[in-house]
Picture 1: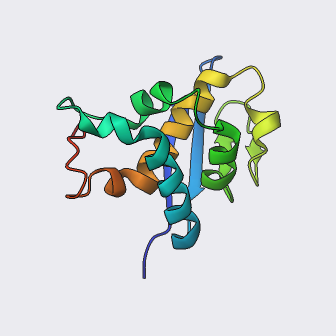
Picture 2 (picture 1 turned 90 degrees about the horizontal axis):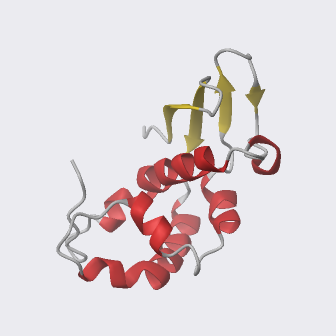
Length: 131
């Protein structure tokens, strides 16, 4: 059986440890979103430099709707904090990230890497991602 969830810890602006647990995007939705990401980020793949999802996000920020992407990759996500014992399920993006957009970018980059890292590393694209 496949493990369809992954998690990672982050620090929020107050120093609290925040754990994000996401469900990996199902195949049909993932392929559709990967196609959109490729359409806006395709030019980034021509570079000989190492590729990172976070830098790609910033490079295409004027061409992509972050909220649309977040609604797909954060579907079914759970956020827990250690100090305040806060838990949000399902993750309410409007409420949780208000005033904490740096954490949003970090978590979105993690969710995209978890879901689409193998897509961007495919032999067809020939990307060099950091180890």
